[in-house]
Length: 334
Image (tube, one colour):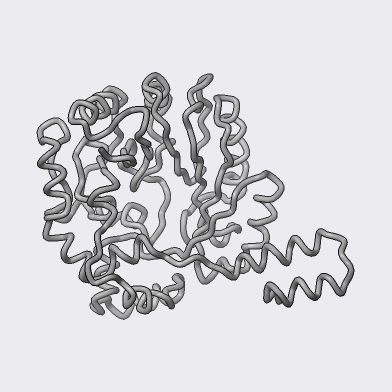
């Protein structure tokens, strides 16, 4: 049985991230849409029937490439999860505010806000939204979801680019004032085709220049050199991904224009077929060999941010100068 299911309830996203295959609109010729609530429930029932999940022990992520809150039937989908007592995660760009009914967020365990920086300039460069509106929506969504039963701690998934490092302190202060977890990660090429070109050395000069101006990829070569000789991708056994049309996907990264994108409709294929085929697609060998699969799961932490946190904390605490100096020395704080 799979413990984590990525169920794409929105096959579209309203952000314009140039390094994401949805945001850069490179798949505009491949129809996308929203999963209807009735199909959502049928999909869950089918997964239970196939013994691929057990409602009380599985967890559903209501996203893969899309923005879940813009699904017109979002509240009906929440009702299904509540009735079936299934826990779930929401990851949103906070561009859209929704008010949901009572208790529908009781089983929400993780609420993530994806942010490309902490200024209008950064948002103009990546998401394309009104930054002030995003901050307002974060507050409103947390309040709305808490009123509906959410008891966890929200997280800001801060995507680190070269141009937004100087905005970290402002983001940390925002999180600290609201009891929000700050979770930074290096932004990377979240477009399978583009990432493969980069890793194989076939990326054109114009695109390579843009990569060098935006992304922090200094660690990639050394990371991939450390890949185990026989690397087993977590997508093979731990995660099951289903798109907005109820197709079971090879993995969360393979795009719609790849021949190995889908294994078939969840209503037409068997559990044995799913389990046997997920690791046997040609694209898997290509992805493993290039190092992309390993890169996607093993991006290093931005350790320098912990120093910033300690430094901010020290400024707030009234300690003797000598003790502050000792703490800075011990933690290598500048």
